[in-house]
Image (cartoon, rainbow, N blue to C red):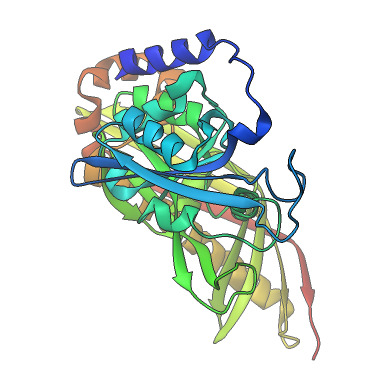
Length: 372
């Protein structure tokens, strides 16, 4: 797997300039979907419509800003060629800002990643996510913005800023696939039929959790709470929005100044992980009778919820599959090279049998009472 990642990186670096092509003959791709079924890849691309407003030809303001085209082939390269024939344009998938992998395509994730360097173009900073079926997501056309990718990217940025998911760029996915367990967690998005007025046909898109990829396959679906736990562990997002149930009401809480410390240990041939999380909290309540008592209760509920999210993430990845999606390898190496040398040869099995303790301390520094 490391060799494949090296080849991909080398091709990206060696990619040269392309020959001159008129803009109206080029499909500047914004978002790409990759599906795999019945032994064939299906590539779905959404690209700017140069015949619409802003095009180099006669402007047709009534035409949509984007065009979606889909084609299939036995390999990624043949599917890309088929897309070019179908669209009648030279496609530029390397300009894509977002790559969506269907769950079945994740089964062939290693091969699927190769599309990023096909046609001598590749964007290692493209964001990567998963979907039940990538084509369904790419075919959604938002009524706001120039291309759907803009709305999708905004949705995931907001979710990450709220500490509810972790975004993954292509180069990060390659790095994770080169780690000993070859595992990563991609944001998982889904379409739904609703009454949204932000899309042309009323189809909405939600972030439904995460897709666990390990052993070069789709392994399990992670909940939104699991992805929040991943945000606590992997990046120290610094902020997390929670909706808690308190005295029969929903209470919105914001955790900020989040700090996570992971301390490994190794005794009796068993790997241990001690996880300590600390954060500040702010919330607005409506309990005028005992605001300070409510403050103490909210802190305890926050601590319990944070521990629950992190524990669930570790159980679904580390314990169930021996999958390292949190960068634990780096943390263990940095803390104790001796521990890493002892477990590296059989890292996945040590993870499956790992013992972990999660602790959390929340300190409410800002709170308010809302009257009425």
